[in-house]
Image (cartoon, rainbow, N blue to C red; front, top):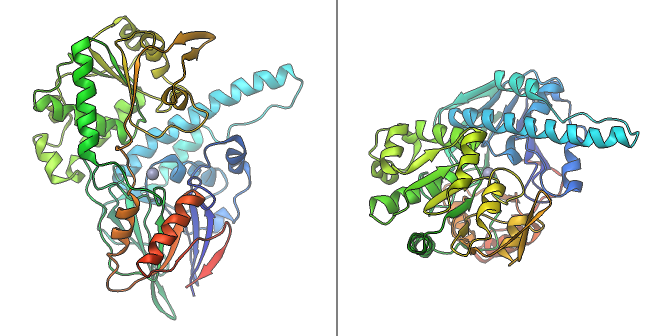
Length: 467
Ligand code: ZN
């Protein structure tokens, strides 16, 4: 019998981690950070619930930190086996984990200043840049559709999940004495309406399926309507001469927005002179994305000329400019009309977007377009909810700009898409476990599966199942 224990992404969407144990092998699937409120993030400090040195392999579904962000902890705690992922994921985690380590270092330095003044003991970051380097040394990138033996009697096969570049659906084949078994971990499944990537590949058989359920309780607004709205705002801004600010996450959404702006340019509908990508991390990620155009969907790849390189992106959107250095970024504050700024953070609680907000929010003719989810308590959410002022470095900025929210851009499959994908299991219908969702999303999805005659289980934290 194989055993699977649910160690994360069970009471919410973060901290993805599952341990598979067979007769001879222990394989860890994902090792993500818990993110969100302080109490949730404290879970990252707890000792890992298994002996790290006993693992035979670690398998990562995709680069997002809620799936990959605790990998350096494994290494600092004595991991002695490889970590498998797709080649594109390997390139992306280098950028993401280094950024995470730098942020932790900065937060800890700030906290320790406070602690020293209060006569308290100092704290250490979760991990540092050296731990990240050591982690990258044991990462092995493999291609989609290439079977790989990762431990005794355990073989892994990655399929395209279409969620972010390199994201995988993980098929795990277990050759046990009682007969072969197959576990499928969906990872995060992409939204088939999104640009650039392929639709999630279908799988037709498994004994056990772990299915993400982030949007288990809703469907997305149609992409057609979203793109029309996007086009209208850009048109309006070009007529009244204001700048457009797009707060955006570095991985996925930024590249999709750049592509959509390129489509408008190609249709003669983008009159703005410059689109500034003002984020060193997003620039690095965009470069990785376009080195892997061969895994984009055929339609969008050929729209960009099918050349598989950076130049094709810049031909597709000639107005695109990268601003890497702080000086370049500060110079952008002088531009008071006709530009589009894309910068992080996506929820406006950090990063260069704050400076753009400072210099543009108080102008009537400016526009801010929110293209991603805004969590409660973030400045982004306050702006979406109609805040009259925005505070930066003790200064209150009046909000006169027009604020737009576009809910249709999403990197996750909707409820309908999740069910349709699961219905691809036509040869052998697996036992279904819903993970990676808030309670309401999982319960609603469970009810929706029941309607199509499929009993889905919602596992509890630390629960072990056998199959
Ligand atoms: Zn993800």
